[in-house]
Length: 151
Image (tube, rainbow, N blue to C red; front, side, top):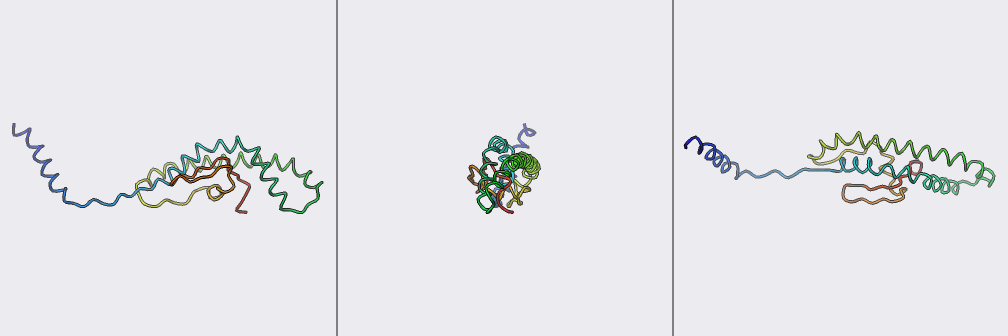
């Protein structure tokens, strides 16, 4: 019987000794992990919306320049095709950056502070997305533009 009570008594003594210790402040920052998961899951919307984004970006950039109507028409079609390819490439970079941030995001989950995003251009151009909102540490970007802003 005394052998069965020994673990219980020892556990009670350890609980009493450690109950007076002050707990440390909880440190957690899920920004990098959340940024990684939203980048991976929402990146396909960039490809789906790329025809609209390409048209919008070309229209906005053409308004900035004072070229003749003929030059604008001549450059519209090849520019539209090129911007669509840039959108697809940018989406691939967004997925790769999200995947590269996932594993480090697991380690930074239990410490304070989060490093800067790997794909900085995507993270800074939230105002150029079709939809952008930050829900706490999670930036939700649907239809990101990879040819606008920052240049």
